[in-house]
Image 1 (cartoon, helix red, strand yellow):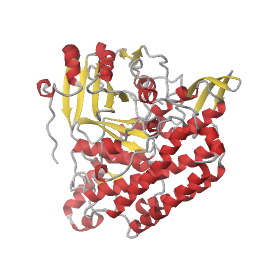
Image 2 (spheres, chains in turn red, yellow):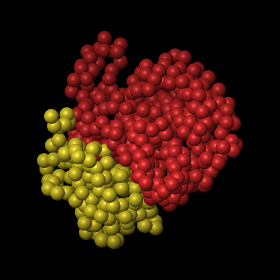
Image 3 (cartoon, chains in turn orange, purple):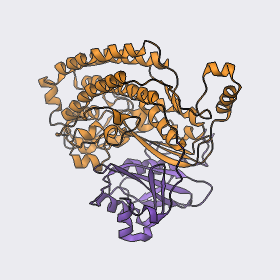
Image 4 (tube, helix red, strand yellow):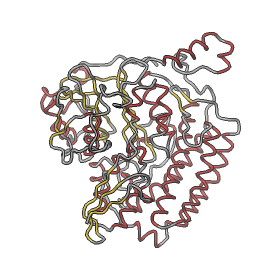
Amino acid sequence: MILNMGPQHPSTHGVLRVILEIDGETVLRIMPDIGYLHTGIEKTCEAKFYQQVVPLTDRIDYLCPLTNNLCYCLAVEKLLGLEIPPKAQWMRVLLNELTRINSHLVWLGTHALDIGAMTVFLYCFREREDILRLFEAVSGQRMMTSYFRIGGLALEPPLDFFDRVRDFVNRFPAKVDEYENLLTANPIWLMRTKGVARITAEDAIALGASGPTMRGSGVDFDLRRDMPYSSYDKFKFKVPVAQEGDVFARYICRVQELRESNTIVQQALDGMPSGPIKADAPKVVLPDREKMKTQMEALIYHFKIITEGFSVPAGEVYQAVESPRGEMGYYVVSDGTAKPYRVHMRSACLANLQVLPAMCEGRLIADVVAAIGSIDIVLGEIDR
Amino acid sequence: MPLAPAITDLEQLKAHPAIAPLLAWNAAVVEQVKFDRDEMSISIERSAIREACALLRDDPACPFNFLSDVTCVDWYPSEPRFEVIYHLLSIPQKERVRLKVSLNGDSPAVESVTSVWPAANFFEREVYDLFGVRFTGHPYLRRIQMPENWEGHPLRKDYPVEGYR
């Protein structure tokens, strides 16, 4: 029998349609059908100035907008050859790890909800609210932040921002203990996750899986540690790896990542350098508001950047960052004008979704729900 | 930090872990090399792409075992019009390389690399869907993002940004 799961189904995390060929309760074949959220962002990027693309990148993956901002900005900065001041780099790391916590909290809550543990969802969203308030404090937006700009940051963080982050960081480890108390030794949770939807390391690599989906199968690779960007080489953190390759292994990896991200935020707070938050590149970075009122050149540069953008030397760049879901990559091609010739996003979820058939075929329909939850997909990023 | 000029001389780059095995296998498949902004690009002869990928994946010194991405760039109106781009990653050696294949504008087609990395399945379907580049030997070459009955390939440069009205 052919069964359609989705596109409107609470456990598919958005508008994913999964076509199941089943025999009784057993899944014989499974095929994901995507494209319901396709908005042509890559095409839109080609018609915008470089700085106008930043808000578009928020909308790709709505759970980690700052990671997408970072990846795009790094790619364009690499094309331009821009040097970013240390404070901006450390702020980027700090906010990126808060984003990772935020994204993993949504994942944990909804994943547990799918499998039937309702309470965890409420706990996770309690802490997520704190992080969204921090994002609002720093950028003015809870979700579509656009806080990283080409050449640095949009604004100085508000005065009490670091105290608020420190307060959160101090409270958070106890909250992770709370989630783990509810799940890690819970017999129902173990039965639904242990040994379910296994994937071997070889299959995970061949199918292009990355991030916790790959690390849950024993592949010890993390772009933050192995190919560092934005000063990640100055931070000390462990990369959680689990060997079993099942839903539980991916769960353990992500929960450990919550703790590791928390320590990275702590290190970023302790060692936050002082100095400017924008690169010294007047043709690329918008000038201060105050300078615009007193200096002629600042006003001219502002007018030029807003009306005609800035040209980027011809060339091409592929920049990858470790998003909460895996390898997020931006391939940007410049033809020397003020608009990108081509912007392509390598979506970690699109590749991770290909693992689904290998995980689920021959198993029960109920396990499909657990498997989809465990690869943590965001359909906005898959479809773009 | 000013940009260093790109290196395009094959002699200077032949020790690179992706170029050395290709040259040792068949020097004729390497059409052009470019080292720019710390990234290596190699243009491969169109008919050799699958074998070149398999060679780099199985290279013992630096196995490029992970296919990060497959995408395409449309250089309309110049010819060859399409450039299919493969981003390879070596997880053990932490090395990246970019392979390129140039295709003509009329009925562009290239051999699929799904037999080398199954990961290419969705990526190649997306390129087929949005650029109209066919991948021969692909197990399921159907549209993936756009509806089945869509006409045209939206990411081509001669396709208007607002779509046809």
